[in-house]
Length: 208
Image 1 (spheres, rainbow, N blue to C red):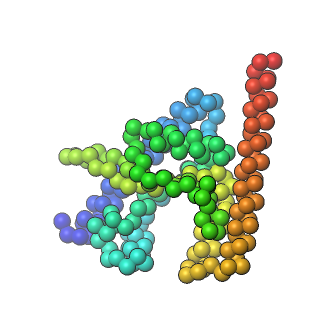
Image 2 (cartoon, rainbow, N blue to C red):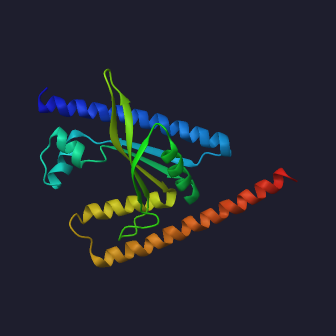
């Protein structure tokens, strides 16, 4: 096969990996809901990078658009974002994914405990997802981001600002962004406390 066909075949394999990953996440959510009596997920977004997007990313990194370079340098061709209700749900989901027999976690990046300079907070997992081809099983790298609703709102703002200032975010804006991230962090804390109070009343009603 020529390089263009190789790239098309690679993207098809990433497409298969996304389908496998979506199915596994749906199973984990349903299992969690069955065990705990509530759904921890607000919503899930998925993304498969286009050829053009992959080519642009490689170009920024100083690499040519080849199959080998995609595999080596582009770790987020498949992206899944899981938005949870509460902070504890985020870590519960990280644990579920880490314990899954059908997903291999390659790398953890906890930007909740260690936020980026701007205040960006989220939990990132780089995972290997098996795809079952005609003659073999192949593992494809995919990125999963897990965060709360407040973090998701903040990440959207962070992305827009970072995109506007492609080279360097002015220090004044960076400081304001970080200050806003602290408000977001406090909101997540308050929402978690509220949920704990609600659970206390739920237990009391069950035994009254």
